[in-house]
Amino acid sequence: MAVIFYYFLLRNLFSFSGMNPTLSWIEISRSALKHNLQTFRGLVGSERVLSQAVKGNAYGHGLRVCAPIMVEAGANWLCVNALFEALELRSIGVEVPIYIMGYVPLEELKTVIENGFRQVVYNKETLEKLREVCRELKMPIYTHLKLETGTNRQGVLEQDLPAILDIYRSEPMVILEGTATHFANIEDTTDPSYAKYQKENFDNMNKKIIQAGFTPKYTHCANTASTIIYPETHENMVRVGVGAYGLWPSNETFVSSRHLETKVELLPVMTWKTKVVQLKKVPANAAIGYGCTYRARYDSVVAVLPVGYYDGYDRKLSNIGLVLINGKRAPVRGRVFMNMVVVDVTGMPDVKLEDEVVLLGRQGDETVSAEQMARWVDTINYEITTRINERLPRVVVE
Ligand SMILES: *Cc1c(COP(=O)(O)O)cnc(C)c1O
Image (cartoon, rainbow, N blue to C red; front, side, top):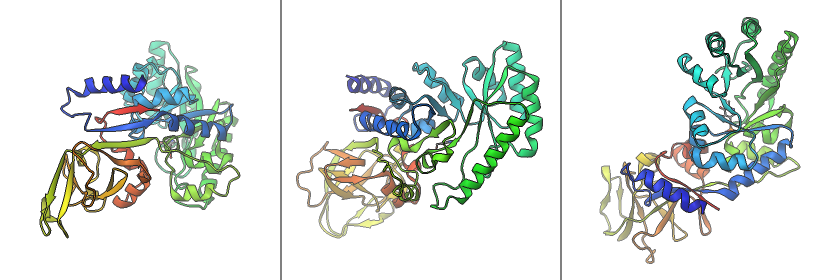
C-alpha cells in the first residue's frame, strides 16, 4: 500500500516538473533502513538518545520518505542542517525533537523558537538574538553549545566560554540543554589518537562548564564511525548519519570494526533505477558522444538511458562507469550527457526497450555500490548518494 501511495503522490508532484518519474527513480528499502537503525540502537543501548542525521535530503535518500521510517524504527531525535529541513519534517507530522546543526540567520531564529526546535549555537550574536526573541515571545529555546576541540569549524574556543556562559546566566529561557563536538579525523585513519585528543578536550571543556554552575542534560560527539568503533564516545546521545543508510563511513572504519566482538552488518538502503529508452547499432570505429571520446572497437549495440549529470550521474563516470541490465554489467561509452548516458549492451541480445536498469545498487548477482561509484569518480560514498537530484522520486519498497 505504502509503495503505491508514495508512487502516486510523487507521480502527481512530478507531473508538473517536466521530469518523468517513471524513467528514473530511487527505491528505498524499508527493511534495510529499519535493520540499520536497530543495529545502532543495539550498539548504544535503550537509554541513550539516538539522534539520526537526515541533512542533505537524508543523504540523498529522501527526507520525507526516510524520516518517518527512522522514527518508527527507534530514532529518538532527528538532526538537520537547516531550518527549512526542520520545517519540512514538522510539515509531514514528525513529532520527535529536531536538532538544527547548521547556522540559522539571526532574522530566522524566531521561527526556531516558535517551533521548539533544538538549535546549535557557537557565537555570541546568535545567543544574544535568542535571548531577545525569547523575552519577546516569552518562550524558551533549547540550545546545544558546540565546543571547539580540534575540527576548527563551528566550535566555541575555551577562552571564549566565560563570556558565552554569562549570556546563558543572564536569561533562564535560553537553556543550555546540551554540549557537542564533532570529530575531524576518525574515518580517514585506523589510528584513534586525534579522536582521543579531541575527546579529552571535550571532557575538559565540559568540566569547566559544570564548574561554572551549568548542568547540560546531554553531551554528544559520536558520529557513525565513533558510534561503531569507540563506545567510550557515546556519552548519553549519539548523532548517527551515513550508517543508517547502510553505508560505511570509510574502509578504515569497516576494517577497524572487524576487530570488535560484535560484527556490525549494514544493509544499503538505496537502489537507483532507470529504463532503456533507445537501442541501436553502432558499427566498429564509429564515435559515441561529445568529443568523440569513445570509438567502437567492434560492431556494437548500445542502449541510451535517460539519466545524466543533471540527475546526479557524475560526468566523471564518462567511459568509466558500469550499469546493470538483466543482471549483467554494461559499461558507459563516451561522455555522460546532461540528461542521457550511453551504455554498451553488445552480446546481450535479450535487452529490450524499457528494460529496467540499475545505476546504483543490486540487480541479480551484480552490485554497483556507492563505494564503487565513489572510487570511479574520486570521492566518498556520502557525496554519491547526496548529490542525486532531489527531483527524482523516492519510492519505498519493503
Ligand atoms: C553529518 C553529521 C553527523 C553524522 O555523521 P556521519 O559520519 O554521517 O555519521 C554527526 N554530527 C554532525 C555535526 C554532522 O554534521
